[in-house]
Amino acid sequence: MIAITKQQLKFNEFIAICPEDAVCELVNGEIVKMATTRNHDDVAQFTDRQLYQECDRLKLNYLVKRGITI
Image (cartoon, rainbow, N blue to C red; front, side, top):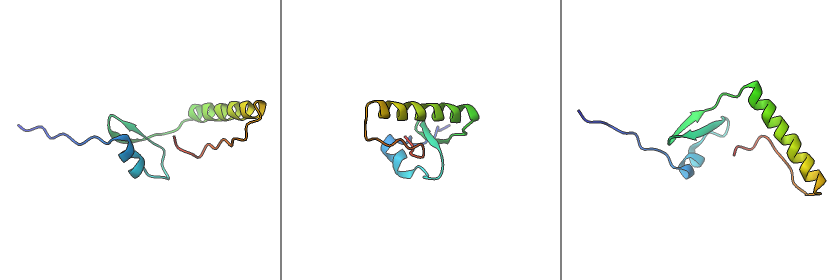
C-alpha cells in the first residue's frame, strides 16, 4: 500500500489563494472556512472598542477596521 500525502500550504501561499469573501484560517497546512458565532462577534466588537479608546487616549491617528482579515 502506498500512502499519498497532500502538499501542505505555506502561509504566503495561503494569503495568495485565500478567498476574499470568506473567513478562513490556515490549519495544519490546509484552508479551513471559519464559522463565526455570536461569541466571536462579541469578542471582535469588544476588541474594536478597546482599540478605538486606546487610540483616542494616546491621540493616535489610527483607524480600526473589522473587515480586514488578519
